[in-house]
Image 1: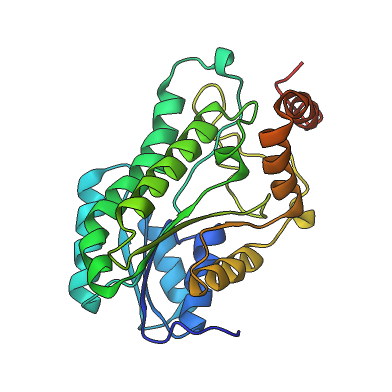
Image 2: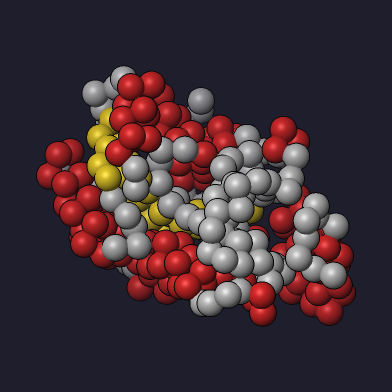
Amino acid sequence: MSFSFQNKVVVVTGGSSGIGEALVRNFLAGGALVATCGRHQDKLDTLQTNIANERLYTQVADVSKEEDCRDFIENVAHKFGRIDVLINNAGMSMRALFDQLEDLSVMKRLMDINFWGCVYCTRYALPELKKSQGTVVGVSSIAGYRGLPGRAGYSASKFAMQGFLEVLRTENLHTGVHVMWVCPGFTASNIRNTALNKEGKAQAETPLKENKLMTADEVALRMMKGISRKKRTEIMTSQGKLTVFMNKWFPSLTDKLVYNFFAKEPGSPLK
């Protein structure tokens, strides 16, 4: 590891599995003090047992609830005395066409977690980050640049997150706070297993070959490198960069390419 976070206080939301857990492990290995939250005490207990590091603090919190976010951030600041990095990682996906949704609660659930979770945690961490001239990070997606079929709520929430963070970056241009977002490619994690279907239930299966995807550790290390270099954004795959480029300059063609790509997914709702 060519970068160090020795004694920096790093907050990672949604750290009990997937990319979040990889971030927790790798930041601890880099010398940081790490705080993370999740909705399930048993998963946090397992994380604490498996890692067994006194520099790790965990707390049950649902980022869709403002009071949970406030309590979590305030407890972290009290325990460690500062916050240097906030990574808004907690997130949820979906897999259903918009007109097939039984009701709009799926859309609201994704906005509450993916967008409002970022807003709430950032709101309460920002005073500490101004003191430390720290960094706010949003874990976004290519879905935040390009609407993806079957992911209306996911794309909407990531577009909203990126818009919010861009405003925050501009407003803090002279405060010393660095604001960035990262866009991993398809990553081997449980986000597709927990993605909500048209009934608002976890689909409990993945349409992708998980062993062919970027690992959570790879994503975590790329993210740490980007944070240490204060990058503006980090799109982690060539496919992602090409998609953003194509969508900007050849939007009509990209519509067709994106439709065809997702129509080929096993069990795709597209006809």
